[in-house]
Length: 331
Image (cartoon, rainbow, N blue to C red):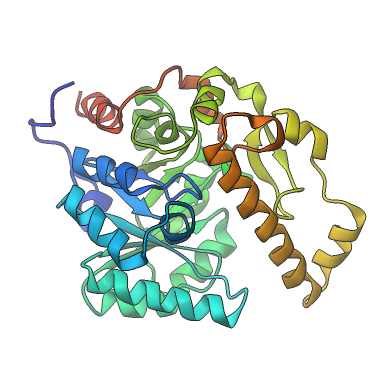
């Protein structure tokens, strides 16, 4: 497919981010490798760096990884800051990562799981923008109180940690804030992309569709599972992180089940024990996800994916996907 040459209609999001196509390759642990992030940005959308994926999974020294991505594309890329203060050590590491990202010229940030104010203050000081992941109005209000420039509206069709509302319900709920909204979840085809923009979203975030690309370093087994799955194969389980996670219903997921056990539920109710339980869940989840990225046998691993699998039938280049979606929107 040819590169984008004709003028593309802008949105509030594309004007803020300085990109052509209102399309984000969402940050994914463990799938956000540098080649995938750069490929989406180079094609006209924007790829978002997931720092734990960059360093822990793909083995880059953090600044060197950012500089490698800059060698692959001169176009804007984003950065995902998970700002939940699970520990002071992690918080200080995230502060350092944000500072280095700003030093390396990154100006688009997506924050998740906490109060974004400190990120907003740093990013706004150099003319950047911050969007925050939300699943409902109360979290959106807290993000807006923190000064964000837009909202990533995570709906019930998303992969990984998912929301509870449909794309239309979430848009109607959040539109009153009069900030640019990004639809996140359930988009695997150009038609679905255009439908989300027609609702009124300023952009769309994709994850699962970009795993099934040659640029993504996920295993062939993971990609095949996405291509072969239908919407009915997507299920939720609490056994991975303590909250519902959207995954492909493979043998491992069927074995562990969907509900957290009695001990985990008890631990998650206490303000102190909750952090311990989430830390345990997180460490186990990190190990499983990393293994599932690289292994070809999914029997003892799990794969995050959203309901967009229904429209994903092949492994295609990231540029091809961006250009197809762009052409559909322009038409």
